[in-house]
Length: 219
Ligand code: C5P
Figure 1 (cartoon, rainbow, N blue to C red):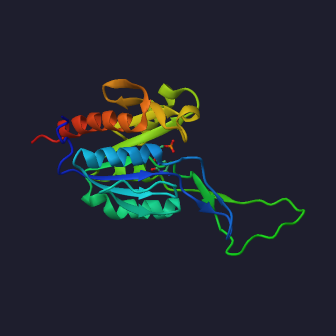
Figure 2: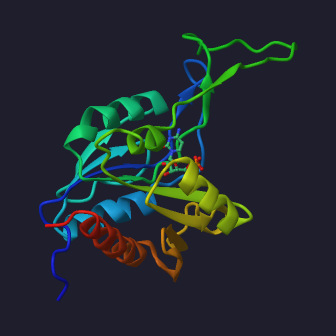
Figure 3: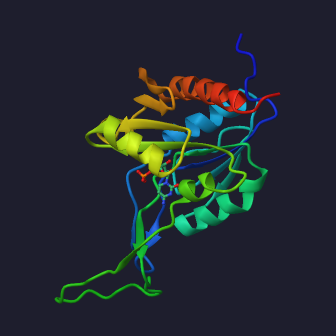
């Protein structure tokens, strides 16, 4: 029997990729499937949380009992998250947010020609970093997919974004797969979670989150 560790907790999350239009039919996206984020949303609901899932375009059904807000772009995702931040206890950013978007997407389909085509990209806002630096910030959990130097890059990212907890995985093994392995980084150091299916990992991650969250909130 698993006691409900997240009863009464308002949890806001992001998951999936974002899609940044270049023109009417083309865009920039990435290979995030949304599986890890959706597994966390499912597990959080199971553990008693009220879950709002701001999701980029994925081919997954919303977990039962989870409110899903579907968005396409990073700016839409940022807006949906910012609107809800004040009513949130825990924020988990699992989405693979596009780092850049085309500066001025073409409303019509760009016609092909023999000339080279340049698309100017501008940086997107960092959603989790801006939430984590709010005066009354929710407890923020970030993800990092790295292809090398996992420990070093993850620790640097956790500090830069001011996150109490960051879950890191190797991009090569995590993306699109049904199982995964994570290393959790917090003030106490690194906690490896061995390879298993994404739902089991989600449950273990959330137990860790619940523990840190309750510790920071004296009754
Ligand atoms: O910097 P990087 O994209 O690797 O950081 C990953 C973490 O930051 C994830 O938690 C992701 O959801 C979040 N993120 C974000 N907004 C961005 C970029 C990343 O919230 N524009």
